[in-house]
Length: 95
Image (cartoon, rainbow, N blue to C red; front, side, top):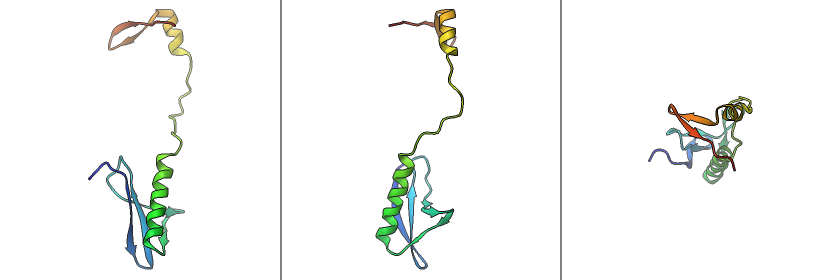
């Protein structure tokens, strides 16, 4: 069962760790605070924290590459009248 999101609690000394699995990774990640895995008193609290951490990951803002967008492509289309895809010229239709 790879490539599926999931969350669980695992017993450890002194309580439970909350763990979650991301879609693009097969391994389990622990819920951490400040880089240290947090220990919860109950299995339900640990699993709940894992689901919340997974939701926070999935609903986070998408980080861009930092490349500034410009009107270079539009300027090229004005100059050449089309764009090139796989070496062929594709006419641009303006609406």
